[in-house]
Length: 454
Image (cartoon, rainbow, N blue to C red; front, side, top):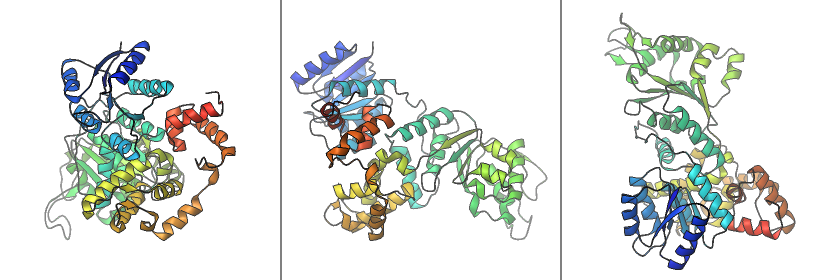
């Protein structure tokens, strides 16, 4: 029998909720404050924790952080009668599985509970291994480490990363520009057995073919004009760890031949040396182009493609993970506040709507740039439409497609919108509510109002 811990200071609600959970086959321990909760967590083992957001001695966000520090894989669901978007985003950032508001819908509670208990946790802790990055790339990497998306696309991405990370398989990461492919590569490394060894990123598009051999394999002093000292190549630098080949499709054809040989033999010879060095590396590659088409066109070697593509991971675009957008936007807001010494609180409803309507061709990198600019311009604590670039607003309005909007202003369309969302979400009401940008409680009320068979 699965054991749950309920932290709730409302005695009557706690008793009712405990009985409800026990009727559905769960063993439940209940307490009224944080101190008692951590006594339970120290002496007993639990499968999940429900905690109220507002408690007499600590708030639920702080309790969540403490739980995650000591029990990182224990699912935590926050409950409150004061549901706010900012609190929900903060809870997700801190590692909450989900966030539900009172009064509860019974079906809703059981669905969230079931999803949380069947979720498979990561089994290997992430260990930061940062390299030098541009500021935007560094913040995207930080977002990848600290923010987990809640969309179906993000869940699939996280599942694939967790599956392949502990292996030594070569991984090819695909996705549009700005989606955070290097972030995914870094996370695969951090979850691997090589996490305490180097992670060496290489921008393949920035290496001139004339010096590619020196960059990848190194050289000895005096081996050619300008070689004033010995130089380690990327393969030697990554020895024992992970070599990340970013935009690998940009490698010149003759460099692909050299790279293939090194990967096949796991040996490299620095320019000017007569000795070969054995290297033990894992290779992760990334590209925003179709390498299979490049193979057909003769621009990329087929044997190298198969060597790099033992397992492929596709990073979804921001449009494919719209449920995650405001979670990332809030993270970038906090980063920008720190960088610019500002104290912006959040986004107006109008800005959130504009963000949802825009198609984001630059993905997460573009979102970060828009948020940072808006934070700089914001004067009243809430980012408003006036803080956004005019051309951005115009493009968002041009992108707006009423048929895809989750607006409930026209009653004639409500029922069809709900039915379409439920169908697209495979009748998962939690996901459907997120797609429609409404609360689950509102969705359940609408389903009842329109007598939808769910």
